[in-house]
Image (cartoon, helix red, strand yellow):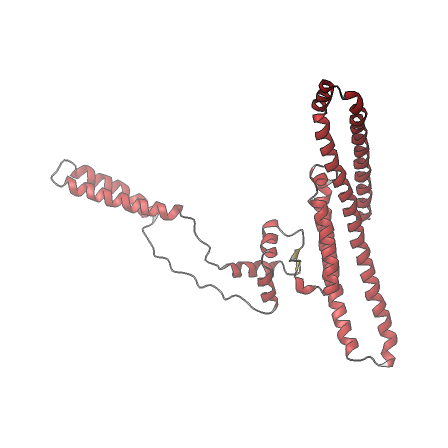
Length: 295
């Protein structure tokens, strides 16, 4: 399980945060990357100065062209052209970002604090539950039936990442409260306090059960999608076989064995219809499970 990011964070920033789990953990522990001192770059002739000097150089070359000093004029022109070329190369060169990557990640992490969660934010039970939800979401989003639009791929692309973030946020809060509650109870509870602690135990257990129900709903949806995925691939295989059927029929007719095999081949069409019906049923069930997620 890696970094979980709020889906409303810009994609380029979300990608940076997901790929920087170790750095983000160091920031959480209090480490701050040192600021970068500005680098003094050697100054060259400005573009404006070179532009102003161009007619002067051209005039000097023109004056010296028909004199014994014409060679000197061409040398001046060559030197001027060389300076211009160096200046153009400096302008066209892509400037490197002087900030180390750590500093860039640190600045984004500060700006988007509270909109990403690290593996350390979850206890073992919460991490397992989140992993189950992420596997279910991955099953749906990576499926061919979703990519082919048999499911509502546009809504899946929006709602499922929202579901992942919401579950991660709740599980992180649950993990923090469980840790505090465990620390309190391990110090020992006075008999007078036990009656107060019991409702808190029930609140934690009830919250966990509610989150588990949402995870199981995602898993049910993923199972329906997996059924549809199997039917989708079976349909593709049967369609491939049906496309080859005329060649088999031709061979059987030429060999005189068609009377024996035609009934078996005809069954292929029946199988295709069965698979098509199974695919439609699976997709319908997946849609119904998806509607449950939105409720």
